[in-house]
Length: 172
Image (tube, rainbow, N blue to C red; front, side, top):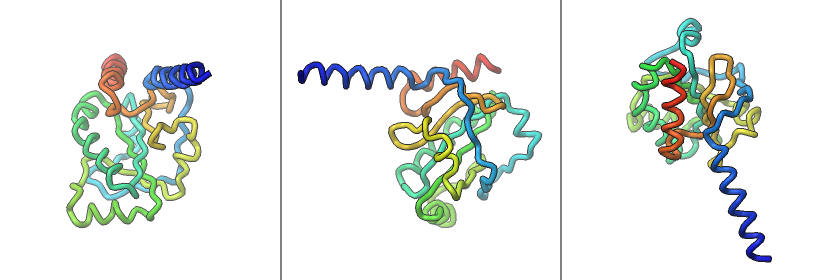
C-alpha cells in the first residue's frame, strides 16, 4: 500500500513538472486598475501594442527574497527589448508596498529600466488563481491578446528558459 501511494505521489509531481512551460492556450486576466510605479521608462499605448509578446510576472513585494527576482529580470531585460518582448511585473503586497518603497527610496534597490505595476487589491492573483506556481506567483508569456503561450518562470529551470527563448525567437 505504501508503494502504491508513493507511486501516485511521484506521478503527480512528474506530471506537474511536465506541464510547466508548455503551451497553455488560456487567456490571462489583467486588472484594469493597476498603478504604474516610479520607474525610468513609462509606456504609452502605442509602445505597448508594438511588442509582439508580453511576459507578465507577479512579484510579492512584502517578501525581501521575492524582490530579488527583479534583479533576474534586469539581467535579461536587454534580450527582451531586442526581441520586442514587453515585461510587465505586477506587484502585490501585504504591507501596502512599504518594503518596495523603502528599498527604492534608500537606494538599496536601483531604479529600473522597466515599469512596475502595483496591484493594490491583488486582483491579478485572484483572477488567475489557476496559474499560481508553487511559490504562489504567476509568470506567463502571452501574445498581445493575452493568450498564454508559456507558463512558469524562466528562472526556475534551464529547460524552461530554453523554451522561452525558443518561443520568443520563433515569434520574432
